[in-house]
Image 1 (cartoon, helix red, strand yellow):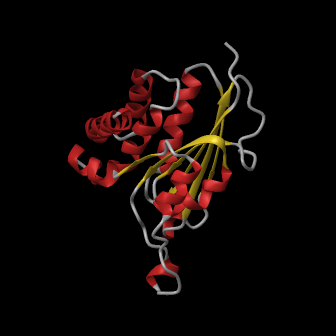
Image 2: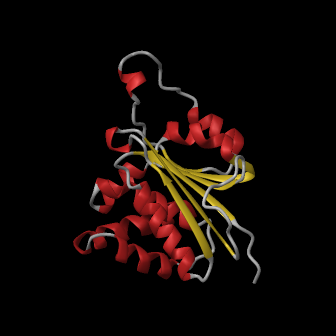
Length: 195
């Protein structure tokens, strides 16, 4: 089977688990026998800044960076980050995002307002956008810290990898005692996305 390169851009804020999620995706694609390239950008992440991961996989991938406007799927763990990276999504690309809002310093200082119409703008670009309250789902799963794993579960429904592979790789990547709650969160994200 010849597979074109699939480009997944994962965006969030420091501490949300974007690097963990992109690592699970990259390892799941590699376990399926695909060539995988990954690049993380997390400048001021420890101070609540943006975190961005490029994950590319297919038969042959030459660069870890997704070319401008060539993102097939944008996964955003925060609404404003979803809007910020929306221009990178190709025509007919997909968006999976958490409805969580994390106010940037410019908003908390009163210098700017947090946009109110983010979801509407995203839905204009991708009418089939998957948007979910990952914090609420994660809390119901047993640990609010698994919110990005909920989002990863939703993302997994758009990719051709078996659920058992995702679960196997997720179990390897999270601390052993945190594995059960992360697996519940992942499954709930998948279930929510499938409707």
